[in-house]
Picture 1 (tube, rainbow, N blue to C red):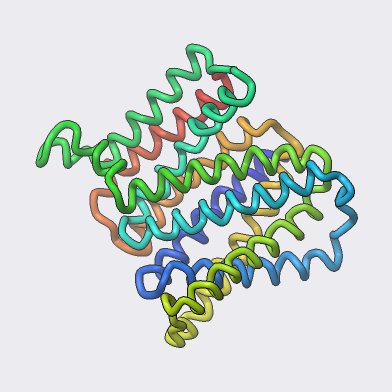
Picture 2 (picture 1 turned 90 degrees about the vertical axis):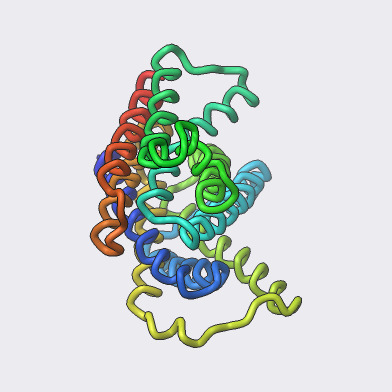
Length: 294
């Protein structure tokens, strides 16, 4: 059952990125993310009327992991959305497959563990796949240009930073879910994220650095769909985490990179789709090798 949950999480995650890309190209990143979590919070609170049970609020470690994970989630979402403002969806989505590499770094720092030979092969596949995403630039600009394109300040670097933030959030959420109910956790987790982004928006408006653009209401279907898809993604992710190990869940969920490439072509007619599809496939296979055998 966890495989179905993970696949639903992958498809819904790619779907909300597709909806978010449409909005962020025309409006400020903060408003795009604010509406994302507004709708997500509403969906989760409605779901909570029927599904909320109880959370261990008396456990200080749980509370710290919950709020810390939400900080990582918010940072990752803002960075990922910012990346989509300057880069194609078919580039940004596969880069999120680097999340397991950052999880390995965290595990080494916290527990002193390192991946085996299979794990190293998986990492190399992910790196090579990310190189293939911009393979045409190797011929037109230089052999190292595909890697520079990913790490250069802008879309690629924002996406990589977002993957790092999400890795932090995933680890903390996994620990919190070990002592809580996945439905109840998500019902609280997403509204807290909305509170975080609301505070940021209010501060930026008070400083005069952010103004509201009423034209955003011209896209009601996109505003609602990105939030609903994000709520589905979060719920499916939580249910999968309690049924299988983090590594197995990630290996399935990161197929969202493949869906992202396809959606980029289908909805935005992005160019260079062949090399990006090959690159995304290599990265997803690398994630599978790293997560399952590494």
